Length: 252
Image (cartoon, rainbow, N blue to C red; front, side, top):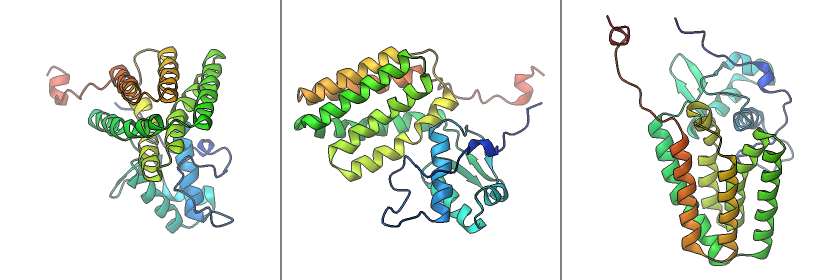
């Protein structure tokens, strides 16, 4: 008999501080975020920091109580998160944190290769010294995190590295598209895991990618990125469901 469905726990939001990684989530022209923006930002950040796992149910009544906002504000935030693939909405069942399917994972990584490949090309065509300096500093910080044993921080910095590439390419459209895809990566990793630790290889790829950009080597940069994403896909457990009935699985 399956265990109980995971539900929202209030400690997923230990402090309601708005610091969403999604740059489009808040209108910075206002001094304070709106109620729906606060809910959106807190849930988005909790997913990025692995505090909300795939399958966790988000109840409107609980969120309304927790954030002291209206149900309308909660619904607006949930709809925006569902639009970005962070949540799944079902009639009469409410919202749950998304669980990407194997096909979702492959398509997200394919999209990343197309979009991030263009980001790398833009950066390598005219490598700016300030950009190269920032990227090198970031990969050093990532290396320190992994060497100190802070794996969670290491992985946070690893995903942030790809956002940093987009931020420095100077194309806001590419940056936003890539940010949306990167926002779904924690869900992929938590749902499908990785078969073994690859921190050293991941860091090495990032170092090589930075140096290819610094040298203005577009083709090499694209090749490193392609191999990096393929290695990630190979490490995910993307086996499709068997499709067998309960009777078949029980041998009856």
